[in-house]
Image (cartoon, rainbow, N blue to C red; front, side, top):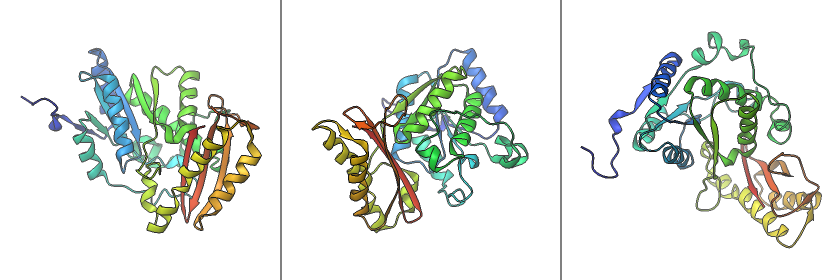
Length: 297
């Protein structure tokens, strides 16, 4: 018998087959077992684990928490970092076991896409409004890949609850819209961004940064805080505030701004006047590493 606070680590299952995952989910549904789902691309960190904790809180001890680990090729552009995206499945499985995850679902390309070639996969899910700006403008095929793979994962896992991180705010909003528009039977939960002690949002891509780039990368959080402080004194022109933040970001020699945008958090429509309650999102390169962040002002 386990003591209070202990977890039955040995109970965690590793599932690689789509058919096996669907069969397991169906068995739990027959028993009215609530399923919570955390989709990831692996190389887990404390931010991912905070999503796992949230899923466990929501489904309770009698529910099941499933974490998927799959580096989805269709959300990477032709010149992006698919080949060097960090991977450590052994470590990921141990972290999941420590957190009391019930199932780690680890499909591969051969299962997720016909013949293992995503280039011949001809059916996609495309959201046509919320995905146009910001990440959608900088990475034109990105959200098509995200919505397609998330739709597939939701169909495979059949969760009642799926937890996403607010660091990818636009992504979470797009997925919420997809779920609403296509009548998926799942509730999307967006959990707060998990940050390092110096404010940098946790990301698997942080591991690509050199020591000097890592120090400079805190400029994203500093820019968000600067914008937040500015709007406390009243409404400000978005163009003026963008210019101020461009100057701030340019103070770091390794930083190269991709975009900064102010928008309504519900519609993602850019605003001309920035006020308290507006949202900011920005993407900045440090060498070859591109980081994103966002926050409500």
